[in-house]
Image (cartoon, rainbow, N blue to C red; front, side, top):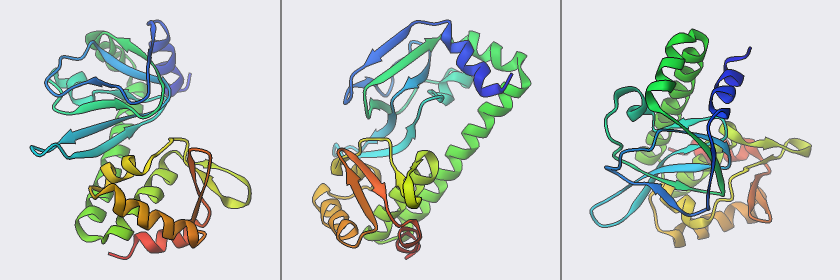
Length: 215
């Protein structure tokens, strides 16, 4: 059986919990109830500065689990977890999940692959946040998440399945919401991105990549 299907089957034995969009369901210092597995929806990890400013670090999608560090080391989480959309999750006992990964080397490799992928994305975001201007940093957000979990549409367009708000993007980039709104309008007017309902669409990935590379 495909290792990703094994993971789904493992978590299927546990009760499904519903979490409403916008709820912070795990806070820094909390002891998690177990290993959280997303069946439906999206969640984000974020940190909060001493001044109360939020910065989104990772976005999790269906088929992924967290908190990763606590799962394998039992060290308490130092971040906050919020539902970006309505969530359906399963929660497995930590030791039972760790035992499962040890007994299934292919599952362990799949877990490791996912961790490495998110680490690479984090490094890429760090590069853009450090060296890029505001416009390139916002472009990089759309580009990274289009590549990570975008849904391909007709004529090469890519839809982001997460209902991002301007505030969400501001928390990812680390700038004011008003600044994000100004730059997004430029991307919309330029035909680089579009939107349908609450979802953004990448209309021209090549131009978006060019904007993101302006470091």
